[in-house]
Length: 103
Image (tube, rainbow, N blue to C red; front, side):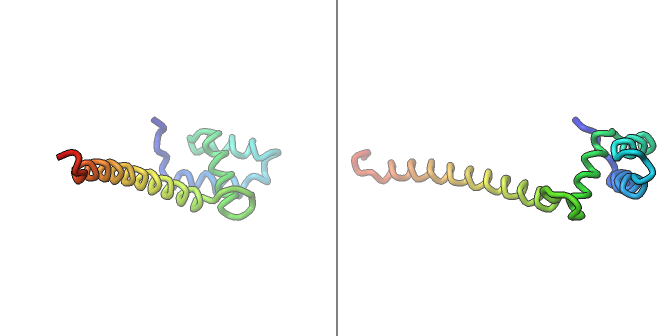
């Protein structure tokens, strides 16, 4: 199970990369330096920076809000499919009970 990173640490690390990346020869070097300094994974920090850029409109992709909406809609869709399955089973049961040939 992945460890949970404190949101404040995450925000600070992303902010540091965005503020100081011009001081490094590449974005990857800035990410690596800040990741080492903050004690987070390099790949995690790289993904957080990309997501922050998307959320700010500086990059194409799905925003965090869109990801949350998709997750919510998938959960709702799953719940509704379960409800439909229960209703179909109940309909089949009650239709059999009401059939005069079963008496």
